Length: 126
Image (cartoon, rainbow, N blue to C red; front, side, top):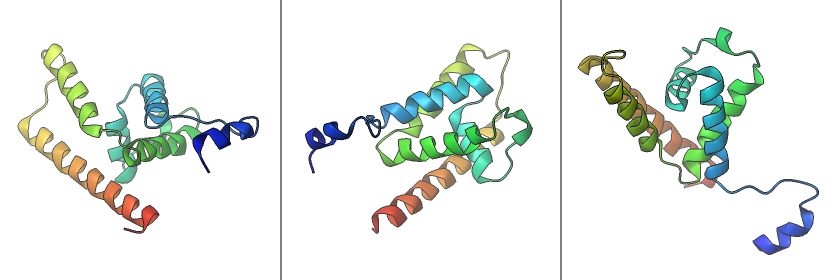
């Protein structure tokens, strides 16, 4: 089946382009809950997420799902880190991060990346 063939079924489902669609959902959640997708996902995967901040519990699974889809379809979480670091540089006085915290964040990110590889291998049988 080709992409063109799917168009005849558009009334049954919505066709989206990834990773752009998932990125838009991630951006929406970041604004709604005032935390980055990276911070959310690390907390979610490590079971340290503060569930009380979520007014809609369905957002938790939705957000996690779109982060995973974003990564599996070529999205780059490194860009997320660069955006956070740019914000830190611009507001140096209001938010400081120690070398120890930064290193632990890098470790968590590598763990997150490892999880994505495992998910990718599981889904695609690699």
